[in-house]
Amino acid sequence: MTAPTLPASRGSLPPEGALAALGRPGGGSDRGTLLSVRDLRVAFDGHEVVHGVDFDIAPGEKLALVGESGSGKTVTALALLRLAQGAQLAGSARLAGPGGERELLSVPERELRGIRGREIAMIFQEPMTALNPLYPVGEQIAEVLELHEALPAHEAHERAVQLLAETGVPEPARRAGAFPHQLSGGQRQRAMIAMALACKPRLLLADEPTTALDVTLRTQILELLERLQREHGMAVLLITHDLNLVRRFADRVAVMEKGHLVEQGAVAEVFSAPRHAYTRRLIDSRPVRDVAPPPAEGDAPPVLQADGLRVSYTVPRPGIRGWFGRDAFVAVQGAGLRIGRGETLGVVGESGSGKSTLALAALGLLPAEGELRIAGRAWSGRTTADRPLRRVVQVVFQDPFSSLSPRMTVGQIVGEGLQVHGGAPDAAARRGRVLATLADVGLTEEQFPGLLERYPHEFSGGQRQRLAIARALVVDPQLLVLDEPTSALDVTIQKQVLGLLQRLQRERGLAYLLITHDVEVVRAMAHRVVVMKDGAILEQGEVDAVLERPQHPYTRQLVAAALAD
Image 1: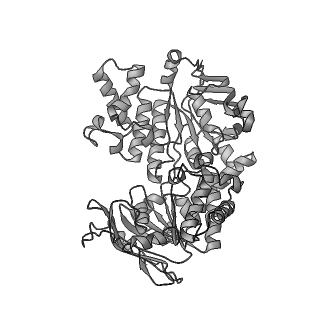
Image 2: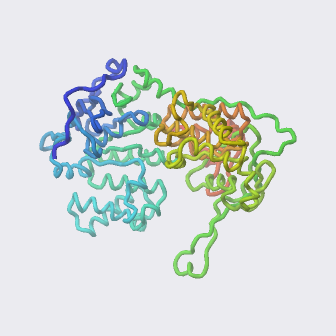
Image 3: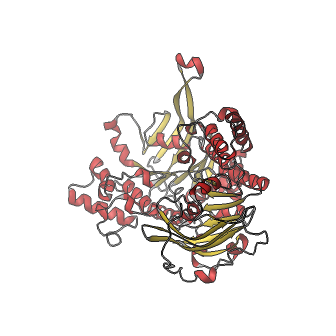
């Protein structure tokens, strides 16, 4: 099947200065060319989203394609394998091989199916959605070998176990029989890598392979990719918005903005002397610390105080013992912490460390033992009695798209808290309060006509997070629980949202419980920091003291991983 083509028109011109910033597509490589992309254009329903992109990848080379969400980088990668559903493609993407070059955009579908997985493989951003939840991961890896290598089922299974072992999955024979939901995030990503490398492809497309992982897991996955890339001699096209990842991993970098490739060249050259304004803006988007010292406490109780806090879950016992009872899994043990007015406490740790459980306990959503007080009051576990406390503490979740109801308008989402907790005597007062709060987070009707009647899908990721912050702020809370509030955002949007949170804290005297695995975000936002592992607090103190002079080996490991990332 021939890919549909676009009209001969080149579409809109690149942003000002783009042509001057572009280096030679091949970057001067003397290793030959594995993939040559020329004038690649992608459109949906006649609307062009990728405009005349040119780049080359040499055998064994690592090229990073960077840009914000919506820049066209993922669509560009999907177009190479004709996986962008409903896309109209034009231009050329030629893959070199022993039998000569093949045009990926027009090669028959049957031949392209042989190229996918065997010669060009892809690692997707979110393994939980990319892996089939109905089949064990070993079967999914073995299926690739059976289709492309024609291996018998038992040999394919043995090879799948071997691949899991090579990618560092513990107990690979047992894990091969596990379903995706039974693996940790890092193990799922390793299984995805094992599947992608099953047929020893010559080119690997890696779409944000470490974005959803903790800093230590990110380092492990990156080291794994580097080792496997060297051992297999394959080329890698890395799609990412993480500039630290690019610095560490890639040989060359190509920068995309609004569907245009605006600059490319050697990583050291581009990062030390970026020529395009957009590249300079990306490089300058690291979080900036702009927090005021918390005010003196006086006689007021801390906004949050916990002593000897313990949170446990009941879990089934393994085997036949599960018929006769259940065991307790302690997710948080003996935690002691406090947050004063206008203060940010950062809680860092890997997945499974207990930091999210600690946040849920602070929100009164999990029963806890020990002492836990919000503004001097303890959670009772009774809905009516706890309602006043729910106005004192609010939450901003990690992913604003999934935390905002798609069936509710902006006015309904932000105004819901006023209906539950009061604070506005009538509909007109409620509307005014909602508009004022939205303006406080940078969203106005001048920018977005009919703002209160719009739905979340009509906003960008950063704007949706502003909506989530407005929803929390509208009831005038004293404490915000921030659960990875910027990890789903691009670097430039992350910087804007962090700046917004810093301003709101200064103006409103808000206290923040910041849950994150990003050490740089903690360094920019927090006054004090708590380090958690396996449910226990290993170290806590002033942010500079803990991050600059960590005492516990685990804290030193976290900081070292963040610096290397």
